[in-house]
Amino acid sequence: MSTLDMVVSSAGWVPFVVSDAWVPKELTLLASSSAQARKTSSPDAADEQRALTNAVSWLRDSRAQFLSLVPRSESLGLFGSAIAATWLYQAAPEAVQFFVDEDPQRIGRSHLGLPIVAPDEVPDGADVFVGVSPLLSGAIANRLNRASCRFHAANPLEGTSEPPSPR
Image (cartoon, rainbow, N blue to C red):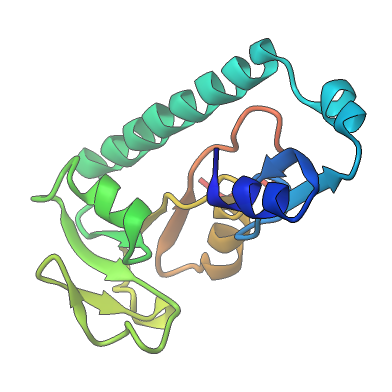
């Protein structure tokens, strides 16, 4: 049981949906004071298994997408300097030359021994893989893409909709 479930339960509520997929970078919790609500609204095991399988498939696909850029790119970066970028970096550490971040507190520093640059400092001709949340990746890539470099979005997670990114 998650911490959020425990807090809500200890307050006398019955949590029946906890999700981080509805609103990017946010948790959503639906709860009721009635135990009946949990019985009628909770996802069945098949739905939960399908969601888990889709998420693992998305991770595998994102890694494969990133690796497909390695032989085609002379200058390769990863968007972000936290969990997702660190995970992708380990797939081809010799190929990654920089990280791209929009956080002013991170720009100008280094991560895994590589520089963290602002989006407008990405070298001309570079490719940057945006392997963050499938709900955000396409929007970020579309917003940052420009003629002098390419931001590549991870494919959307099955069942989500996000704007397509230029490839």
